[in-house]
Figure 1 (tube, rainbow over the protein chains, first blue to last red):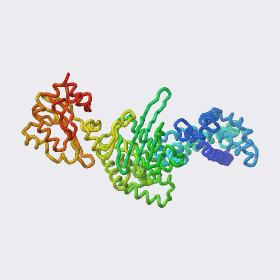
Figure 2 (cartoon, chains in turn green, blue):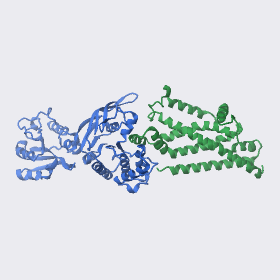
Figure 3 (cartoon, each protein chain N blue to C red):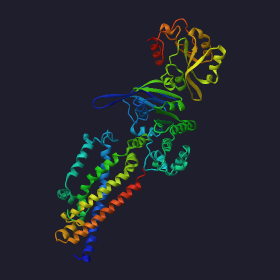
Figure 4 (cartoon, each protein chain N blue to C red):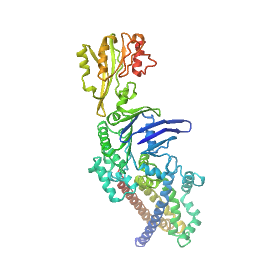
Length: 231
Length: 373
């Protein structure tokens, strides 16, 4: 494909990738971070270990949550995407159009795939926060909510940003499969033109753009993480 | 101000139980600096953590400022904790916040408004001598400076009580002294009651009014520091003023002299030698200034058997010194006995005290036993 034709396609595909990854990242943080925090709080020695939250309905919340997260992480993304088609249609229905195809619809399985991934990374990051800091806050009379906000999440922020960087890069990879359910993006471009039409140039250019995007994400992530850390 | 009653804490692991605190009754009076001394594993850390219920005692009660804490609801306990400052061995400062930010945390927790917070933080930093470091991050500070931030933070909500959990144990001796001086100043300035735990005798010696010695979860000794140090059977005194076990030559009398207060101002050793014309040999001595008074122990050897030295010993007692005759190689020791004379009491010259009933200090008991063997 000549460059003049490829350029607008590439530009649209890039925007679609950003669209998918951007929204998914937002939802992943909103859902994954609380799950990560909850995994730490309800675990042995956690602040909510003996509370009603940790034993809701007499069930060990930590165990169940951990199991669900592991199930979520054990699906190959391609299969997860297909299995989730009815769920995707239902969720999209909540936002107006009940569809399971297209770039917007892709955000649903991407989020479902990324939340457990990020939740685990967030859990690890939060666990790294020195117990002494939590104790100091407790000794000041801080509530659990305050400790989560001002101590756990704030102190883990550099690590959380690093975890999010890893998640976003994984998402760019997952989003390349959007073509399977009729979504767009750079991956779809590479598959349709580069692979199915034997257009090596398109393939090469797409791959190069992906490399640049991933590098840029990593650079920004590292920079932010460093800026936030005062260790 | 702080009162624990029957405080017991048992840690249960899968296959065994560890009793960290065993029926501890602690009384800390208002405005005093109370030191809990003990080796690691003695339970002192658990004790201080039980005072603000960072650790829940298995049984017993904790009262701070007249309020019983163990029965409080979670939110009432949080409110009480705001009135109890705590300082930690490893400072526990938030690395993500600068000095001013760290000191502001307890104020934020208590819901103090932004402007008032700013004013209070500046005041606190001034109080601990860190006014110029408000915008430094903990990673840029020295250990002593970090602890000053920790202390400023602990004072955020004007507590009446300050708990110091090994607050100087991670610091070098000089920094330790400056932090202790700060604590002492703060007590004077703010009328704080300070409970501190430490494994360093020096800390107790330099700032504590009262102390308790812990061992295996129990308080084995407690009282005012000057009293403890001048009691001949006190473990604390023995630890602070270690006198080598000296075996004197035959025909000499070894005295252990414990003194406190003003007596040390008098040159009693030289007076003794001059007035009674006896040869005095100093075998060992340790003198410290505790709470502005000189206290210490000294071991002297006087020439001649006990009977020869009755008069000089009487002179020493008259000076208000506590004199214990460790061994009399002439008569008492030969009978397998040891004289222990309590201050002010009449020396019992004819009958050597029974070593089993006498409250013998361990080291001298060992001395006597060694002598017999």
